[in-house]
Image 1 (cartoon, rainbow, N blue to C red):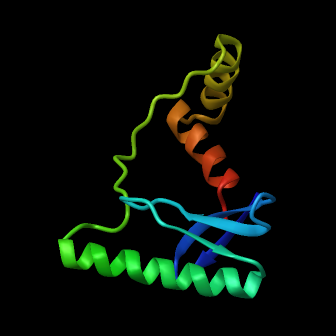
Image 2 (cartoon, one colour; image 1 turned 120 degrees about the horizontal axis):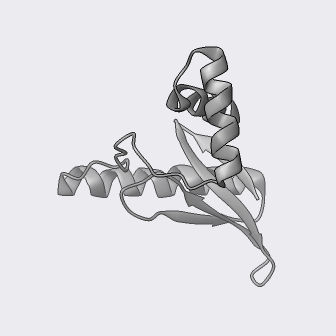
Length: 110
């Protein structure tokens, strides 16, 4: 699996052996949008077309195209990891949330 980005939107790209094409699914949208292509160039062009259609429909219907996120989520981890995280945070004079946020930011850094 790979990720392709166009105009600030990202899509997960997978190869579909049944149809011998690449399939892309645009991520983080308030609805669904996918596209297909045989080559990277064709895939990127189809990504642009699919995104344009999706954005136009959203505009016509008055819908925000991007999914909104609250900034809050629950995370379940083993008690031992929770303890190590708490100790590491205390040692750095930070909250568990601050240490976890730093780790998550490093993981998704572009």
